[in-house]
Image (cartoon, rainbow, N blue to C red; front, side, top):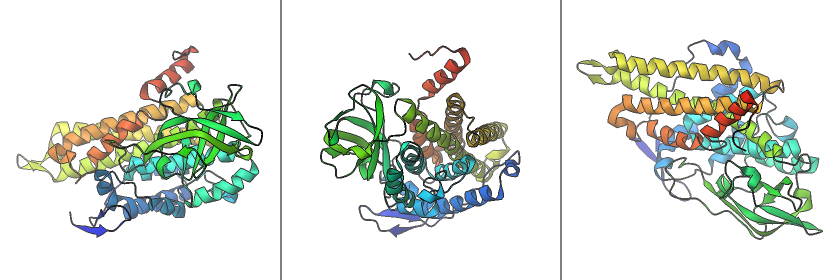
Length: 408
């Protein structure tokens, strides 16, 4: 593939000139279930990905570089806060429109989708849902436009699947709150302007606080040497006697249920996004199988290759039906956490399996940056773990089936 140099502020990123010719599979004609507006949204984001993400993403991942200028572009295309009302800068869209946006962006790269879904579901959503009107007016338009980047602080070094055990805490000092503690594995943190942080009060109650970059004692060390999500910036949040203004407390809801509601929204986006990664692997594998000649004929003519492709398409189609139904239920306020857990666990797992099968179809070429397969595979190894591990989501569903929580 030919390349042209695209200068950046930190490193030189190669911009590919090869055309992104991705075609979306739709075996059951599911487009018939979409509105014209939803199709238009998907088309606009797909074209955005082809223009802004596909040409640079392989080199960004190879160099572990987060292309920060994409943040403003995401804002311009309406990727941030699609379900937030338009009066706050959001899109005012339904949940399946949000899902389609996540699908298209993750087709480009899981790390890029992480940047967007964190901003939308884990930063803008809690400020809109639990924030004061002053907080909504101050933060949401800037986050929607991409002027500000946000992050979400829940996971701690010693508390991942058990967030209720968090030790990050704040004390009422009269004129302000004094925040201490640390969070880790935080997407966007090294570049974030604001962080929605979950911490315990002196009474042991979990609350959300908005922490702004520049507050004394607040730092965001970056996490290096990742083999996954390499084009996404990941880091920590460290709070050393940070003075947080009292007006930065989210007043609408406290308790662990508040961040869990945010995670439901984000997990729904992940369930949609994983389909995008799966579709990209399937599309690449199908094309490669048609073109790769062995034993004087394309490898697509062999039974085992057709078996792999047929199983890929079947799983993608089932995953599409799952999230489309849940999206409708979310619009109706009827979707439950176990429903979303089922979708997140299933869709990420099938995407990871499809990536592995696609890698085999590509043979040795599948491990190179000439194709997106290995990048998707390594990214999905993170996606299968974050925002609820594969096993925890099984147990959430198991608790719903039996009424017996196995993780307590």
